[in-house]
Image 1: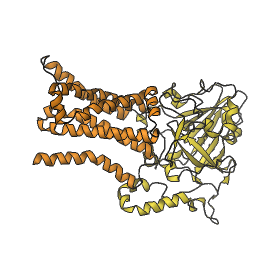
Image 2 (image 1 turned 90 degrees about the vertical axis):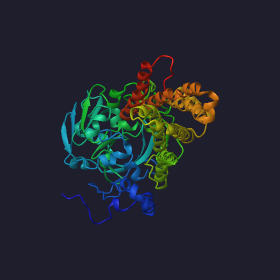
Image 3 (image 1 turned 120 degrees about the vertical axis):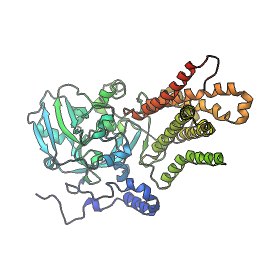
Length: 313
Length: 199
């Protein structure tokens, strides 16, 4: 069945104002673009497409103005491809994301492999504008497309023994030749407590700015946990495993003193080497204060009632 | 004549990174995070040039090009220049010129303390880099003072190493180069009679 629709303009054809203003700037700077062009002519300028219809607006969106598509797609931490954030877009541009399946397994009544086509049809695709705060101290606002992660988990019916969810990223040395230098083990693994994963704000994300997720942002399907540091939002997932005990997570394996299992955004708990009190929002000049739970405290703080967040950082 | 011309070339080369930075800024091509880009770019060049000054003496001997000494002061001053730019981007864009906040950072964050040490130690070297100061201090004392650059280089490399998250390739490259150049001095010194000061 063809999912492409022809009648109405695709979301991609309605260029966000910030993006087309940027293109004008680009044209105005054509003499300079001779050198700078390599970076400007990357996927954002190329045709993009969506395998899903126009997303519905989610009530879970925040009001912050979204970061430009160019910035969201040219400043990525995706260590499988390279540790150089502006270079990920280029390194990942030929990443093969089709065919793709996600296996949901472990302590579930219905273990199952989902094809990407099936994932796109499990629930209406919604657009959620979310804050994204990186543990490094920068942040952005992204209009993700997808639905709550709980939709996928419910399909598999977790058993009573399931307490945590373990995620695993795709890893292929031949497509990710620089991974060996990243200094962290692969495949990338992440985890959430089951109640965190079932929270409506935890998202299974398949798109950005109304179109398919670009490779550098975690194509074709990733997890977004907006109240946690960005590295908890695992990209390009192939495995979701329901388990009884707290699963290993990549950055914690690499350095357990600096990166905890929970990694909730918390301005009161510094990274051992740098402060987390403020952040540099992409597109802004001055640093702004970081909010507890990245500003989602009203919705998620209750998940951690009675817990010492300094201990469980 | 030739000497003048060559010095101008080295001077222009020293300014080239600044020019490149300006060009990218003009084209709004400083990545999605210009603050971080400027900080990393200036810090990288400060460190590269510190390593370059350390390389002058070994290269003079190994390549039999004693004239290289004519460029060492300029390279050192450019290292200090990029170090200052690096410091200013931090003080301005991260700390909003709050000097007390900055000093608190230095006391609290080892990687910032290391970088701060590297820069502060270069200050007396920049001040006493003139011929007048060499005369005033006397060659021997001047030379002893300027060995502070060894400490600066180590502190700079440590600053970089402590800053990265997990990919330590570049910090290790700088550490390797600086280590090699410092080891050269240890070896040369150990081979010489004890009373003659090494370079």
